[in-house]
Image (cartoon, rainbow, N blue to C red):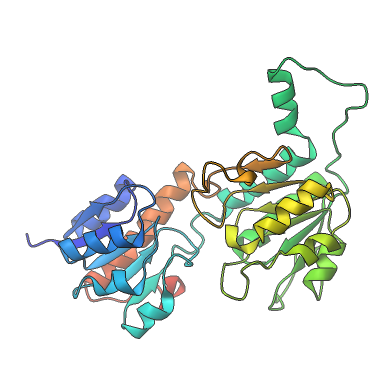
Amino acid sequence: MNFTNVVMTAPALAPEAVALLSASGAKVHYLPPYPDAEAVAALVGAVQADAILCRQGRVTGAVMDASARLRIVARHGVGVDEVDVEAARARGLIVTRATGSNTRAVAEHTLAMILALAKDLAPLTAAVASGGWRAATMRVRDIEGLRLGLVGFGAIGQDVARLAPAFGMRVAVHTRTRPASLPEGVRRTDSLAQLAADSDVLSLHCPLTPQTRHLIDAAVLAAMPPGGYVVNTARGGLIDEAALLAALGSGRLAGAALDGFEAEPPPASYALRAHPRLIVTPHVAGVTDRSLVAMGVMAAECIAAVLAGRRPPEDRIVCG
């Protein structure tokens, strides 16, 4: 069999996705974790890839130009900020994403982070582990009655809005487009500043674009009530990290929880890695057994369709 070549910008892919690609006559070539664009381009060029399955590492115009055979860049996930979509469009390439593949996993992670912040789980665990115990003035916070502000209201934001009221949280949203409908009890605010002012917890669920980079800046953080929390299970670049560090340092924010940074992985010395009022996870909110299979299979289905001369499902196509 004459194989077509797929470059996976990570060291592993769900067996179900590998089987699907193999059945379509494709051979998968893997890269180490978080390769830089030069490493991706080198492998794409060496094998003359027909497709790139993008999970970690950027796919730039130079990467695309490395193979004259390239037809599709399929995202192993929902966000496409790691792909230069305009470069792909200019080259006539198809870009796809795995729409809805990790929605529930990220929503669950968001709620877990909110609960951990309000209940001080990380600092209390550290205190007990170091030999301490409960101080006379120590207390944790009620979840019921917290005002949750959602920035963005796509599939993940909507799922969080459905889950949060079970804990007694009151939910408001701000989104650039007006939703056709909102769940019962969820209200929409007209401005991000107003949402911040009315939120004890500000949770981010929007894509990273040039327009949303540093969307959460010093002014937005200053608009929040003292003692508020910021949760980001979307993309690190949505937050001005210097402004976040200042707000934590001043005590205006009680805490924050991040599943991603502007630079991933961040440098070992980076202050936000170990801040005492910060919970951090290494961009794993959507990385569950179920979502890994869904992301891999949906991306593989798109690649198999293009290699066979068919069009991928329309709801997964970003461009092309």
